[in-house]
Amino acid sequence: MMADSSPLLLFDGVCNLCASSVQFVLKHDHRGLVRFSSIQSETGSTLYREHGFDPEQPHSMLLITDHGSFTQSDAAIELAQLMGGWLSAAVIFKIIPRSIRDAVYLLIAKNRYRIFGKKDQCWLPRLEWKERFVS
Image 1 (tube, rainbow, N blue to C red):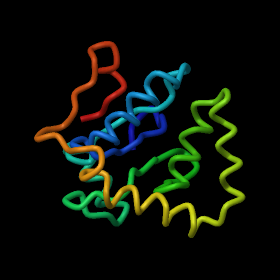
Image 2: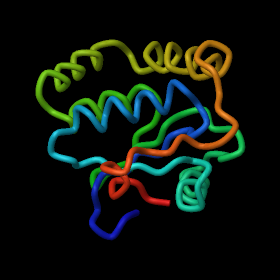
Image 3: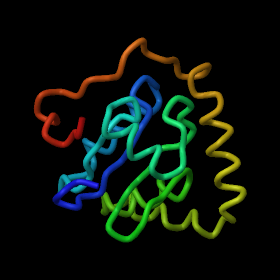
């Protein structure tokens, strides 16, 4: 984990849906709490593997925080809570059993390239966001 212990989101850097999600977080995380690393980067690949996942077959974002690691729908809900404001209302989705939330998450994840497309190389952030990325 990063030395400053900021929450770190590992995401699939070649996935259009994932890159759009990261851009959403960058625009709505007004406190600038969340840092990012693509699963394809050296840091992201190492951390993804350390948490028991294959970086060659990314199937879930991974959110690493001081109070635990989160995947699939739990990662999305935790991320929304970290951003605060109206996004904190996402906690309401915890009333839905995790097995159902994760089934929906995995259905989208499994089809994300087909539906949203895939890049040949990792998405690169705008210059003003560069310091929030770990390589």
